[in-house]
Length: 314
Image (tube, rainbow, N blue to C red; front, top):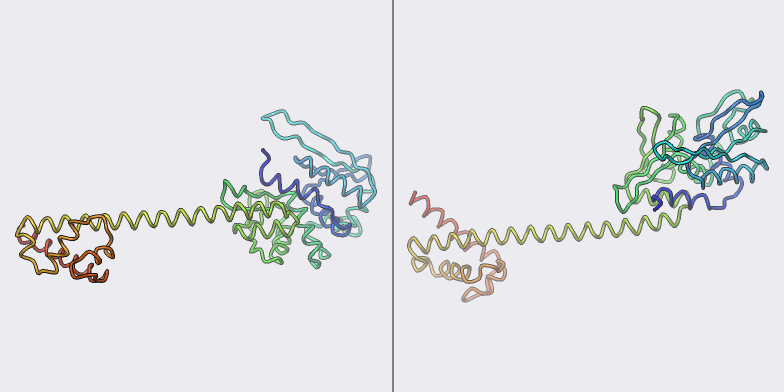
């Protein structure tokens, strides 16, 4: 069965977007997964992925936006049963495309690793860029089996900062951390992960995530209530047993008839009804009902009397 992250990415690759917004998505995919090559003194481009749906998306976007035919190469991995590698290769007119996507500078002399201002200044392009960034370097845990966690990996620190800036434009409370091999932007809050999925257009995945999250939260709430109720019952049982033990000790060392009437009545009712709560005891006392605090006061007096008798006998 496909992972939840794979389901999200499959949904994203099936979205239709406006050409101007599609450029932002394509620029993220190429900036994060692309490699420049030189073939026959010409600039070439390889964009690599292990996901065939993303490879098809790349191929379609390049064809749609730049009317170019790319080559799709499959490299089969036999060792350790790793996934196949899919390479979208472009051998012609690479420089104009990369300049148009703000990956190469206007002179074509250097690579821009940061997110372009044209993306950072327009919310819809931010959404598309974040979609491309998640497709290229993102992952999200299955909400049914794991802790909530979504992250996007980026090689360059300035690019990583740009991704975090865009995510926080949508109030996602994204955070960043440096790793030995690069940087990640991550989300830990379930609601923010659902919001991010919505921002990048993964509506079906967002709805599934929310369904699972709500069910998990309900189960956790029920479990907490059950545990609390169990703890309270255990506490009540232990307290009742201590009260009964003390009453029997008093009974064995002087008798209940030596007690004041109200204490003797309470002692007898507690021994006769060991399983009931203090509130219920209050309704069973002769001349009652009396309040829970009144019951508690009389039982505390019996406990103190038993402890005092034990101390005198020691």
